[in-house]
Length: 251
Image 1 (spheres, rainbow, N blue to C red):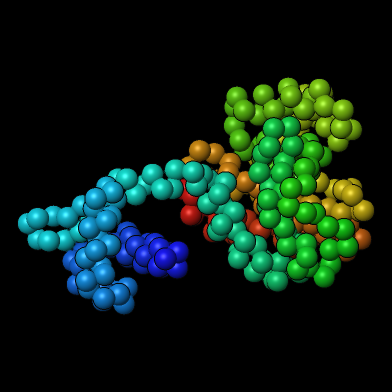
Image 2: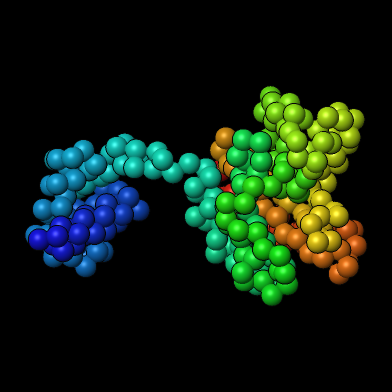
């Protein structure tokens, strides 16, 4: 019985997915596109109609999704969309540049690592892990977020981290230095952090969502490999292109 219930749910989702791709379809059309028997499709459509996810037009006997379908994605916010989209693109970027790539989102007084390709990169000798928290002013992702998140959010975050005991955030107590760092970041279109842990340089760019910065994408390399200027010229364009590709899903 449990197996049949799961199968019915899977089939119902297949029909809903097909209808969501192209609304205004007949049961026969849906049966052909899903490969399901027509009687099964009729039963599934009756259930979806009864629960308010599908409506049937009596004039042409075609089925259309309703606004209730949108509610299924209410919990899937910009961050969730970004993470879902980012993983394959980040893996492709890491394969291209070899150096490790990470994605982080704001989490109170820190940036939270949500996805990383450290395990994929042969050049990552120190590893970030999902769930690691990075200081905002002490990381390229944090600086990128602050530079592009806008007011009054950036001011509120700076007030919060200025009270932090983390040495990496002490710069938040110096308005002149903060203005210089964020100003340079906005002009360049990317943030960087040199003299990072274990002699690394990091670059980061924002991923813009419908409501602002959804996440920040970064890469890092050893400063012994090249200068900051060389790294920016070599990596920032592809980093930005990947961020823009991710952003198309949420913008």
